Length: 249
Image 1 (cartoon, rainbow, N blue to C red):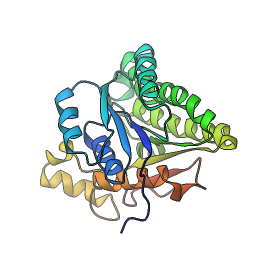
Image 2 (image 1 turned 90 degrees about the vertical axis):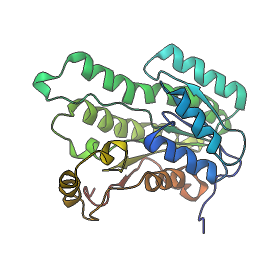
Image 3 (image 1 turned 180 degrees about the vertical axis):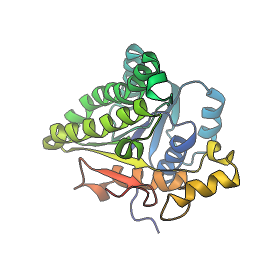
């Protein structure tokens, strides 16, 4: 039985065409929301996903979240089409892993620009209509790496740790206008990448997780949907960890 629903809500998801993003888009649509999601390169994947979504009012747009002008164009188009927005999921992100001494400055900068600055740009654009409506919810997709750190991922860890601090700050700024902001921090989640791992590699990963298995995309999506829903109306400024116990906050 569903303990919450999103019927009639208009929700934006960046980077929603694949991976965890597509699981979030599907779940929000199943709960009754109208969803606009973005893709960066693979229009075919976005179109295929859109065909599978239940309900009506869904659409997708191409977005380069690291490009300020493109973010302004896309968010303006969505606001023009919808008029108002009930929820925003900042999910788009990249990795460019490398040990610090070998990491190029541009690889550090590009990860910060996409994962952190991109979320700032999206949040600023949509918060304007939310502030007028005195309602809305932001859910930013962080990572267990933002709390634990990880060798070879200084740029990614910095972007996700920064995103959590950013979320706490906007939660304080927006609270008086009825707008909430939270993070969901996934751990080791099953994906196309994990499917390519050997049995030995999978065993090594699972041994680090108290629940002894990777998470599923729908388990992250459920956490996101809860925080977007009215069932979470008294929750703001928090990071909800979905990691099987591999990091305990």
